[in-house]
Length: 518
Image 1 (cartoon, rainbow, N blue to C red):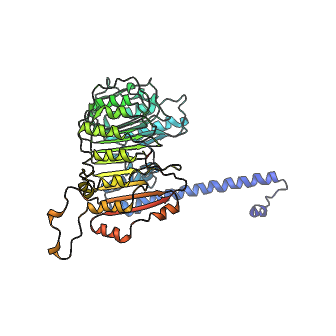
Image 2: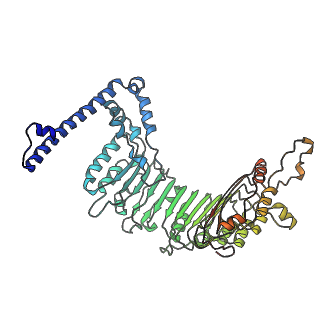
Image 3: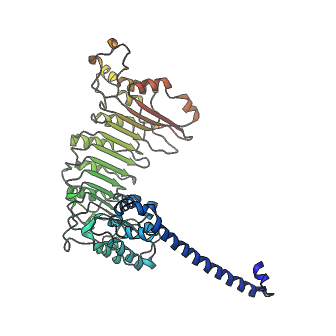
């Protein structure tokens, strides 16, 4: 301003003065913009001419380095992450040489997270998608399609997006579609395609809740497809070759839909079911239990409080190895139904997780007695502010003690248990807990070999519980101090005998003890 005044440009009229000032700002800004562009161009030339990275390394090595810089595509994750923002375009902005290498390396363009941001530029984004896929050569493709949360599909067609990727359907390896179900009509159908020879994983998750029944999915045969995840859809709207699947994740399906799908998935290895819906969709349940001969892992998240007895009653899983049940609220775990499933299937369950699902002392005893092959047990009680659950009591722990079992002529529960994790209120005494651990681990070897314990005196019918993790909650500081944890020397002694123990505690005022009721 002073410089302008010195040049006699100052005016008594402030409006004229402002106009002069704005003109000067525009001139300087234009000059600065030109200088910035020139600087950027010079930097690119310097990078092209003098970069050791380009001068010393072959193009093939540079391409490999570029590929390691890009985020790994997770075919089981349908959500956009910040890492997905790092794309090959970053390399193209460095210099012409980097751009040329990146644009001619198909490997960099073989995976894509494409996020629609605005209906106004959807045609531009479709063009960008076409260019991206064209650079991928003939490599297998991993594609994730989604839209921003505030994207409005009113009056907007997804035809351009789906048809663009549809041209490369024979190269699909992983496909995630997080778009409205109205886009499904543009997907390939079995009548017009020979199938998806490379497709291994497929996720369909329409945003905004339950999809409609109008738009159906009639997918061609995919002989290599192993993983399928469906959310908020109707089974009656889906025509699929379920017999090739090994991993299935279902969200917001009715129990009769799940059973009908299980009937068709003869090769299933892993089943995950979340947000199971109450009611049904008029599928007839099987008269006899569906035998899932290859199913080894079941993960159930029953966070809607649905009665799922029918699901457990109508399946048989002779190879079931791992079972995880998660709930929210006060709905107890259907322990009797699980026991019936285990007995019906005659399986050797090795891993059991009970998460946020209450269970009482007696049902827990019955459940554990039915699992002689169990190696890992994880129990995590609901973390409510008005009530607490303490199913792990002395009575339960004593059944794990082989010495107690022999003295009372009982069968020792969980004879093969190796890992125990518990989170909840403390319903046991430390004496009983430590006695169980000591009874199941080998004694310390004496320094004098002649005094070593003979093999015949050791109880080999039970395994040592090597890994113990406890997270205990208390109603008040007074209760916490009244039940102090074991002495450090005791824990160290068990550590020398092969037992690792982790103990943490939390005081939550207002909790009310609940040991016998759920």
